[in-house]
Length: 307
Image (cartoon, rainbow, N blue to C red; front, side, top):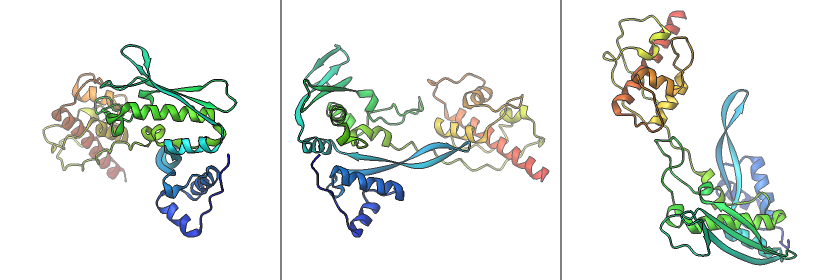
């Protein structure tokens, strides 16, 4: 690949570190600069950039959020790298798969997204195009769904406005990387990584423990999930995702002293099974929060007594 080695002075490195590669560790930043130099892509021209996101990892049995970097470029950057190789011989496509007819077409005018896109790339020495297929649902960016607790809600950003353009870019990137693995190794397009870069939904903070008056102070696992209702100040209802987070944090116990998950705790308190299709009412949300508040209070009192 005929590219001149890009060099940066100390001032330029500082600018890249605080803007284009903001949030990278020293090791990640050194790797990013090396990739810029090897590929010949200029970060100041927005041809390449570093994206840092928090990833949950297990460290000594505990969940730890650590920064993880992905080096990304635009589809134009991919095309530039392929062109610089002097072996790029053109493309075929994109083609789109219509999920209703099951047929491929070279144009898209439907109001719904295509099921997949296919692009072929021809490199010097190849006898035929090298194709790659990208499924729409594998890369489309969607919002958070309160009902399923997953990122499978409404389409977001350009994936909602021009889905056929976005998925065709992904298919083209996949085909280019297959045809030029040495030139494009370790660098991904924004369209490929946009789903992974979507921030997780914010979980509302745990509401403060209300002041309560309870007749019975003795701790009993059987009563943790069935404690007082009328004498507790009502907490504000929160989303299902926040309730799940509270249950996972507080870890209420069953009558046998076993830790309950959200579904088990809901069934004990609401006296009915919970399914993913259920919509929790404000009354049920408040009831669940009150029981969790009471469990926290009882445990705190027990710790004070034993201290």
